[in-house]
Image 1 (cartoon, rainbow, N blue to C red):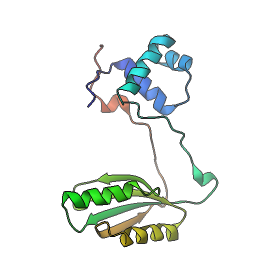
Image 2: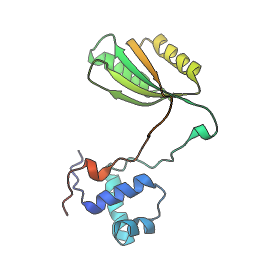
Image 3: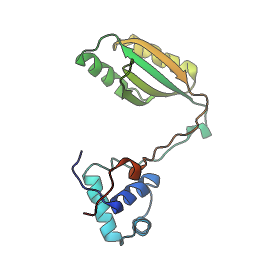
Length: 165
């Protein structure tokens, strides 16, 4: 927690910029109901607080190539902190891993992996196993169709009701 208090305008700013990171100062100000300078000052405050972590373009490489998206469950053989640290360091270094979550409930990690094809995915898994990073078992779930894949968080629904600052 940053300790920063967010009001309804801050939430509208966050919602707008995560949906359009290239929005102009003027359009953002219009969208949230402020003049440009106070709006931009608020955005700078949100960036400085670390709430805005960066700006990115969302790519759809399927427009130019076939890709395989795979969900992978991983269970480690040992559960000491050093085992978790070693696995997490290794996963952070893998560009194929789009997301990795430490989870409870019978497995240790859930990974989202993108590869050129299933053969490429299997070579990736083989390379992980060869690195001896503590994997005891893994299960593979091949995504056959994407139903929904949002990157924008529902800001207003996730945060407590804003109070005017």
